[in-house]
Amino acid sequence: MMKYLRTFAFLILLSFTLAACSDTKLVTPETEGEKLKILYDDAMALVRDRDYVDAAIIFEDIERQYPYSKWSNQAQLMTAFCYYKSTMYDDSLDALERFIALYPGSKKISYAYYLRALNYFEQIKDVERDQSMTKKSKQAFYEVVNKYPNSEFANDALNKIDIINDRLASKEIEIARYYQFNHQWISAINRYNKILEEYNTSVYTEETLHRLVEIYFSLGLYDEAKKYASTLGFNYPDSDWYIKSYELVKDLS
Image (cartoon, rainbow, N blue to C red; front, side, top):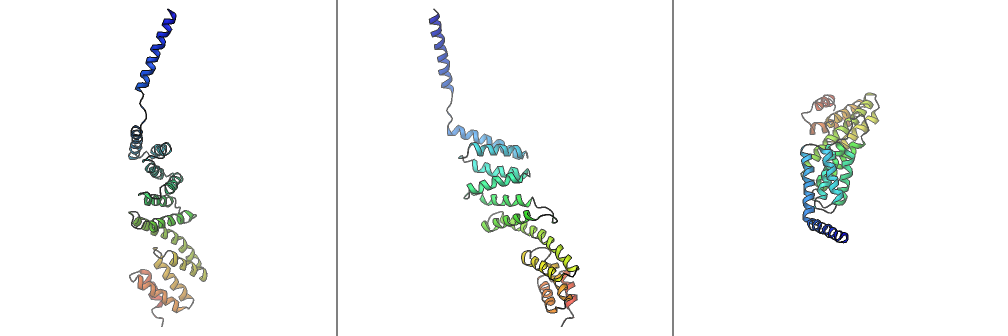
């Protein structure tokens, strides 16, 4: 009797096991893809709610767990975007460097370069501090312009370069004014010329030309003074700085 019961119990257990196995679905590419889409949609919902850090964590999970899926490269780019919006610039830059290395032919590669430049741009300090990040940002925006001149990001990259040049030129002109007002003429001339050579689209170009007129006039080098006054008048005829320069050189023969 006990033998019969043990046999019966075994048959019952076996039937449950077989039934459980019959209910278990194999993971197919379709079901895996559906799961991945749900994860991606969840992350995008967090982005819309501006919960960028939690969104970045999900995007990173997608990138890590499904590196060969069609969602992986987009998830990587969204990781970079979310960290950028969270002001976690180093993490954003790391994600962008991976994206640029792995997907150089992506349709969104121009955006990756642009976002990298924005990460540097947002870290620019005031003009009294180290300007290494300012220079990195300028170089990165030039990459956008040179590599992807017809992209939707090229115009804004050029605008950002102008802003950066203004910042860099403001530092240079402060130093140049100091040299000029302390009669260190050669040092002042060198600084002003640097502004004209490297930042000639900055808002300080007009003042720089006038300051050179002042210096050469003070040194008695009137031909040089007239040359810079002429350049200032030709390019900026309505400038207040030109009026000042003209008053200096108008009586020179």
